[in-house]
Each structure stands twice: as C-alpha cells, then as structure tokens.
Image (cartoon, rainbow, N blue to C red; front, side):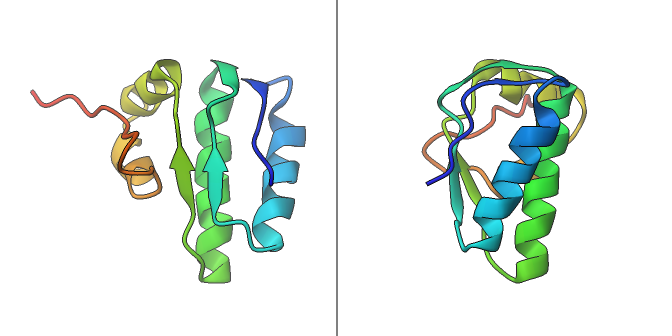
Length: 98
C-alpha cells in the first residue's frame, strides 16, 4: 500500500505524485499521510491532483493523519474544504471559524 514518506515538497512532488497516481490507478482508495514530516505548497497540489484522479476513476479517496503543517497550508490556500471531503473524519483538517 502506497503511503508517502518524510517530505512532500517541490523537490519530491513529482515522484510522490506519480507514485500516488499509480496507486490510485490500481484501486487504492486511502492514503495515510502520517509519515510526511515536511511540506510546502506542493503537498496541497499533490493531494488535489490525487483527488481529481480518483474522481475521474469514479472512486472515493480518503486521506488519514494529515500533519498540522499540511492542515495549515490547506487552510492558508483556501482549499481545506476541498480536501476535507477526502480526509478521514477521525483526523480532519482544522478549518478556522471566524
């Protein structure tokens, strides 16, 4: 089962994206993000691309264990709600309520 490790940054995004797309193409419907320790905006783009690929296959895709950093980036870029649909409910992305 594919689970990205350590970093999801500009330097690693292409390889991680391709590995995740391969996993989705073979039917994986959940991705555990627990091992990702470093992120930048590329991480958000990769998660959105994975969701789009799963939708195109007509399959659900859930994410579990997003880091605080990843949650913060998703909120900063205004896509937390888009990613929320794919987050395992036991580990949600925090969406601030103002």
